[in-house]
Length: 169
Image (cartoon, rainbow, N blue to C red; front, side, top):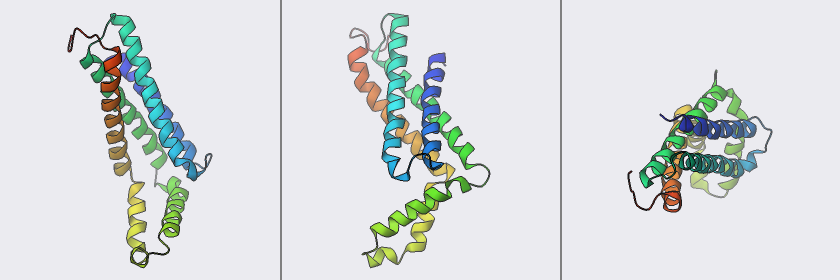
């Protein structure tokens, strides 16, 4: 594995973990979750761009497959680093997320207060919210999100930066 995948994926994953820590620790309000998600995506895209430009400068030209593979590998490493950061916050019992769970549940109650069918399933909703903050759910969601973004963005980006004469060279 190229060291650039590790370096740039690690930077993006570390930024992602720091942003998540900031929101779940209360340093940033829970109403800013959309901004944190945007920041995580922006960190990944920025690291992919810098890595691919650096690889292109080193090799002189890059193929479409090398750009795509680089983006996917950076996204995979980013997902691993982000997952490690999330699991560290989850240790030892997950009580770190109690405020976020309570905020999410209260938001759900406020949203569904006029719907008697939804209010009848309060206990189910509470369990679903608790499951959303589990390590397994977060890891699968982040990995899927990062890989999808890495695949789509690098395919788009490769159209601009890749060598037109070689698809896989």
